[in-house]
Image (cartoon, rainbow, N blue to C red):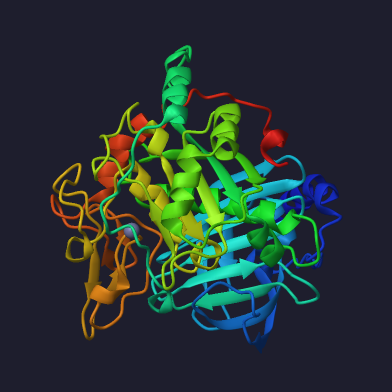
Length: 435
Ligand SMILES: [Zn+2]
């Protein structure tokens, strides 16, 4: 019976993925048919273009046919730690030729994004974060283990100085014209990237890996929201990719200059208008030395969440930190109103007195931190988990928040509805998301 079910799933799933370029199509009929990696034997050096903080790597053969069948469970058979079984949160096919599968279990969460048959994954566990990087040049698919303590943090610990401008006025006017035929609950994200990013992700030309990367960044952000939601409650925020597009702007090497570009330049503001994006994220190849990103934040030298803040709902994240340190998810949450851990925060006017992140670092006990925490505060180290602080949620045996003190997830839940209405929801045809 079991094999019959599997066979019928494969019969429908296989044709759409028959052109996959990194896949073994061996379909084991034993219990190993639920394992994510069919081969992890080759322990290698991380590739030169891997994300910052990559400390170990394995050439792997991914059981992509398993993911494409959208199973209820997937066994992550790590080469360096005990296996865990993930139970499906989301499993859906996407056009053209792609899917999303996410799941949680054993103190881990996993996100697997396939766009046009290129598969990228992120796995967040208590011990470390892992990335599944698709091939670049002739290298194999690699499973990367990150040491997020090695990765620099962001630079948004100074007060923003920004002034309204002509574009901002136009954008607000456009928002006001939106018909309110239904409540807009999804935060639609325009993800822009530079030629430098494209060249790093697609050294052989084209933009296939780049597009998978940008979709994956949004998928990982959604899973961070799901992970951070109290059981039985509505998810704290819903996000969606409005559009992924390369811009002519080459990047400035300065995150604050990049933010001004995002709010003032006709290129990003025009794209934002066209795609009706609530928040704009720029993935850049370089920025401040030792920094991973920067964001505007409501009520931090700027208006509170709402139409007056909408023109400033932008952030920049460095490619090399985007998954290794979850910098994309870190900067994105700043835009909604999340702050760092209290010890590392300089915002004198947090939206709520408990809008902070959480960490624990004991000599022999739990050592972990949530996405907004600076690792420098942890005396015994604190691997990052894909969570915003929520006292009601555990990642393994790490309680990810403190009641009424460190509850960024509550702040995100409260203010994500304002962010979702920075622009009207367009509901454009799905296949349009990629250039
Ligand atoms: Zn920050």
